Image 1 (cartoon, rainbow, N blue to C red):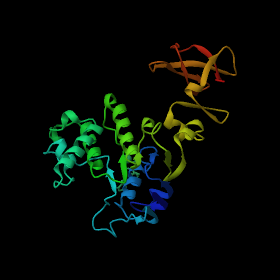
Image 2: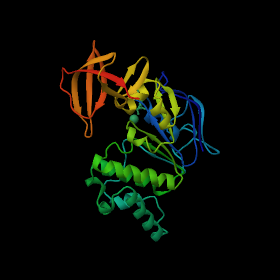
Image 3: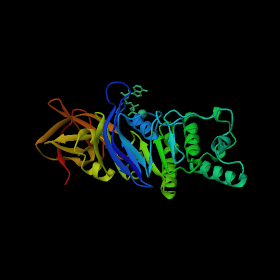
Image 4: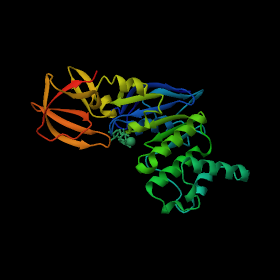
Length: 303
Ligand code: ADP
Ligand code: MG
């Protein structure tokens, strides 16, 4: 179990993170979200023991995670970290990069394990390819597989699918998160993509103003976003009478108090996102058809 107690950290004078406390059970998936610069990457690095804390403690079971002041070598065997910028060995193959840290005294086991991980990250056809010739997204997948090679108890992932194209992203995400669950590996994942969170995370932590703004299950935070920051993570939303409503919760009706003028319509596949305006205030709602700018409409909250 990961225990983070009242953590405070600053690079220079001002704290980047303060009052950070949370737990993660064995096998749990915890998503860290927040705007760019909110401290997601810093939190992962601090959890990994890359920096010394100003205050607080981090424990993995009975081990306290300590920074460079106390450790000659950063990192622990039970914990792996995949950075936003991954460093691989460019002149050897995908297979060799992944197998690099596995014991060569068990060649069969090493081979089996390497092949298993290559399949998890869907790189089978590139097994014999030199890493330097791969795309950014493919390298990111090699870095993931390499972190999993020695079966860590906990893995820290910094925007793990950010370089991966949409064609591959969905299936890769399912494959990696399933592998982590099946193997009871605790996963702390920093992301700005709601698709990484909904459907996978057991807990979601929102960082804002250097602190944890909220912490709950994705379902609770989606259903009751409470603040615009949380709502904006999930999609377009509106504030009506101090309540937050997503675009799909509004509909066009014959008559209502909310009389608006359409300003834009965006094609979204199975619906259109319509932007409308009233006295300079903009609202967003979903509609099955496109609407012409200038169209007068009335909106209501769906029952
Ligand atoms: P995120 O990953 O959420 O985008 P970061 O953790 O990278 O955020 O950054 C949080 C804050 O810390 C930012 O204001 C950033 O400029 C600052 N920061 C990040 N890395 C360093 C560093 N090595 N030295 C000083 N400041 C840093
Ligand atoms: Mg970051």
